[in-house]
Image (cartoon, rainbow, N blue to C red):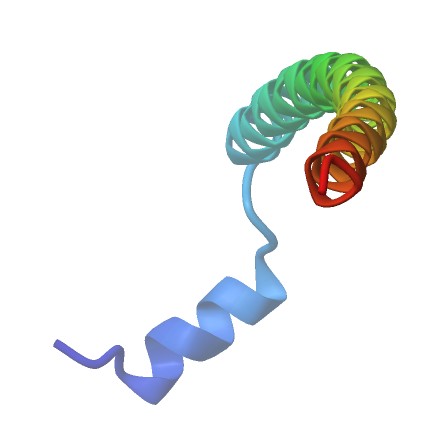
Amino acid sequence: MASSPSQFDAEIIHPPSSEAESQLSSLVYDMSQQVQMAMTNLLKMITEIDQNSLGIMEEIQKCKNSALERKKSLEEEKEQCQKAAFAVLDMLNNRD
């Protein structure tokens, strides 16, 4: 229900009591404490995520290096097998 103009004017003329101000102040303080706790928790989570991310990136780099080494090794084996196969073919062709 809407306030009548005289009630509204009375509220403007007579500001809220000190009890109401105290309650509002307490509410604002409590909210700021909750926000501060939430921000602290978020910062902890962000730090943990950053640390985990760094570990994951290091592990990915190790896997890449390992894969490159394995690829190089396999290519060397392939070349050796090809050389051996060509040597066998040459020997078979030269038997005649």
